[in-house]
Length: 159
Image (tube, rainbow, N blue to C red; front, side, top):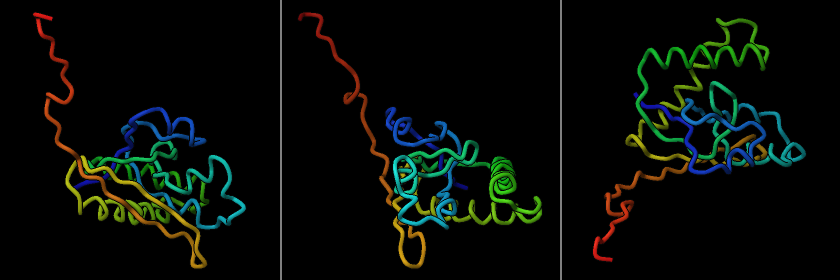
C-alpha cells in the first residue's frame, strides 16, 4: 500500500507556512481545514497553506511536496489513530469512535491518490474556493532517474 511523506528540497516551506510539516511525516490533503473559509481568510501564510499545502498528520503542518512511498498496514493504523486524535482535539469530534472513521476516510482518499503512481513520484496540490466549496486538483511529477555522472565531480590528475 502507498501513502505520501513530506519532502523538502530547500528551506522555502519553513518560510512560507506558519507551521511547516516535518520532513518524512505522513501527509494527507487536509483540505477539510479550509471547508468554512472565505476569501477574507486567504491572507499571508494561511493563503499559502490553502493554495498548495499538504497536511502532515503528526504536526498538522503544511508542506509543498509529498513523495509517494510504501506504508505498512501497522503504520497506517498508527497514522489513523493520530489523525483521529487530531479530529478530537481540534475539530470537536465527540469521541474516538466518531473520529476514527473520518480519519480512515481521509487516509483512504490519500491511499487512492497514491495508488496511481509509482514510489518516489512527487505530488502537489492546488486549491481554489468555488461557490460549491474548496476545489482541489493534484499534479504528479514522476521520479527522474539520474546517473552518477550527473552528480559526481571528476578530477583529472593531470590538471
